[in-house]
Image 1 (cartoon, rainbow, N blue to C red):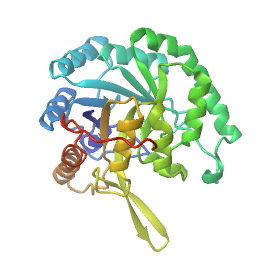
Image 2: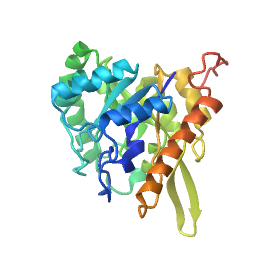
Image 3: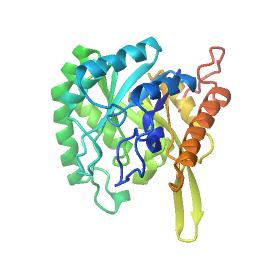
Image 4: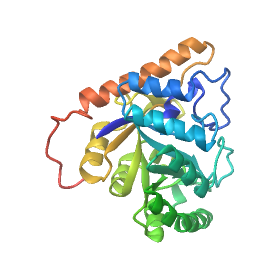
Amino acid sequence: MRLGLHTYSLYLHGIGQAWADFTLPWPRQLSTFELIDLIVEMGLEGLHLDDGVLEHLDSSYLKEVRATAAEKRLYLEYNFSLDLGGFGIGVQNDLPAALEIADHLGADVVKMSMDLRRPRPVSASRFHPSVVKDMEKTIQILKNSAPDAEAAGIRIAVENHCDSFSEEILWLLDQVNHPHVGACVDTVNGLHVTEDPMTAIQNLAPRAFTNHFRDDRIIFQRYGFQLTGAAVGEGDIDMKRAYEIFKCHSPMNRINIETEMEIPLDDMETALRLEKEAIYRSVRYCREVLGIGNQQQGGICASEP
């Protein structure tokens, strides 16, 4: 397995897509090429990036990013959203444009989220007619673009992005039925739709082309609980088991660390330091505890996930 970073982990540095009406109170702090240098400094091997990283989308610039990543021996994956729920998630593209951007970048995976609006109660909304209607739109979009993705050597990975149950993603993939269309499994996102995240991981891993290797912490409170960000290995997701499932039951050969820390925004320098420290701790956990990238790592995979 190679170890990389979902660049949203550095959103306080100004290189992440807008999400949930968040507005960063200071300017962008890293250029694209400074980010690449930082990734190398962190001992990582790839970038799972979106338009928040890219300073513009001119083909000459994208090819320059591609050449720099290749020089540093970094893999690139491209991340975008259809934003079917109309959340206004940053700068977005349709799938043909995303494939063109990925091709210029030399990215071999395009991660796509649907960002559906779900009816309430969420826990009872599996395959709700309104959800199915939007997924049927997505199926047609994927069927139209899958041949172009295959011709370009790009795989499309549909994420369980806070908006879908794993069974819905599997149904969508079955309807598309194309070898270049699979899943992106986020190790936390099942919680957002009241699904056991380990169930989502087990269901999606065999069909997944990429992942967001993310951990969150559950803090119990008087009126319920708070779900808050954590460095990988410091939260309440069984990351050892998640990695075992990926390693033994998935075609994936990369792990993309993702962190999203709840950090006060009253001091920019402190916020940026804490954000980077969470990534460094995540890298250490993945390298030293999970052994990711350790060529001597062996072990016997269980026959069942």
